[in-house]
Length: 433
Ligand SMILES: Cc1ncc(COP(=O)(O)O)c(C=O)c1O
Image (cartoon, rainbow, N blue to C red):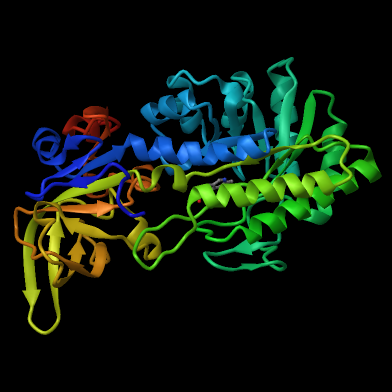
């Protein structure tokens, strides 16, 4: 699925998402505009909850790096999810949404001392500890601030599995900035057990992103269960929790063919149940998954105004839009590909091969290369699909660009959830000489 679930195009070619006509919203809020279809988010969350129906001892934690804004935390909080945060800023936003800190997992390979103190102060549910040095810093900060609560931790480990869209490599890939090497795991667990305020809960790994296949997760699970058995048998330590990370893939273009989240969850949940039932673990661990992209990506579209169309004979037609790498840095950062339509010409054939250029002062600021579109003209609206994840969250103020507004649409209602930045916002941290 590339388009948001609730998107409709009527006979006249008018586009609706979440029961809201999009053109009037553009007139109200301007372009570029991020639009999020709440129905798509809710239905994806329901698909993830299949995991809980098959293996009830599980948790879905939304990896909020994909899109971290107050309104989304509120929405997902109501759906009962847990949350991954990777910075004090994400944690602060989560708390601003009224989500209690005990529903948060705090990740990161180099959390700052301030971030550790803040996480301890707020009593986050779990710190996902990346290395032994971090554990030592946690101890120092805990003692210095005279905290008294127990601190739950997972250790992030290098999974030695590298997963890509359709395949995965079982060994190698030890070369990662994230996590404890497996051969050092028992050593750091012993170290953690020597600290009376630490509650060692288990292990975590994240094997990649845009993964279309269940197999690497099954392999990771089996590996983790055998590590847990070894910890139980050799150290008398129970792993109460095993986190398989995020990375479940979604469709950006017609060339992508990921399984549906429903099917993914049914398969992985059965594998979890079987593997744990067959194990000799005395305590059945809680299984955590951490989807980010797949919860929000497809819900999002970005609409842009086309300002100019330039044809270089026998070469290329450039279509310039009023946004680009600052609101969507994925194409320039790692050649990410997208699908799009000219929103006011939806019923026209897509016969024009064009390249959509952003407005920023980099020739590499190309949003869509050699894509087929309806005939583009200045004044048209371009709708780019699947922009809900890692677009706003990776956006910047490059060229002193004002970040766009975002609206949520559902059941004929819309809600502004991010205001467009103002010129005053742009200079708010400037200090005059
Ligand atoms: C530790 C961890 N968990 C979860 C995720 C979410 O991955 P995705 O958005 O691909 O589901 C990431 C992404 O980088 C991650 O690093």
